[in-house]
Length: 164
Image 1 (cartoon, rainbow, N blue to C red):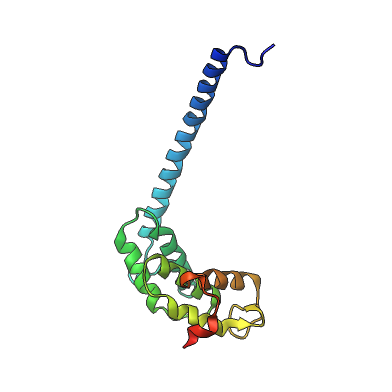
Image 2 (image 1 turned 135 degrees about the horizontal axis):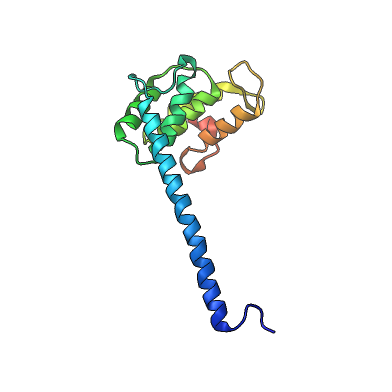
């Protein structure tokens, strides 16, 4: 006894199964596109006049970097990304995760980020990175610093040469 009948019946069954898979995938893809477009529109709508994102001034460097990272790869209006990147280039802060996020966002927009990478070494504490220069190393800040430092061309691993 053959499983699933004749060769012709198996071909028909295969065609029906493939069609069913594609039919289910199409609405999901449309839902994802709709959700992405709405989310990008939301981010653009809540951007502040200075180019930053968010309502808490102390969180603006992080929130703005994350918003620029999200918008830079999509079909969002260019002015929002440009204004966000300009804000990120000039914002003062002294926090490893904020600085790492800023470097990643600036790199994604094609803007200069190397000074931020060099300054990350001021946050080293032992084998890792702390939130601030005086803090113990922690997993989050170290992982973000590693991600930002990996932006270095060719993945070079000689940070002592970066300070010159």
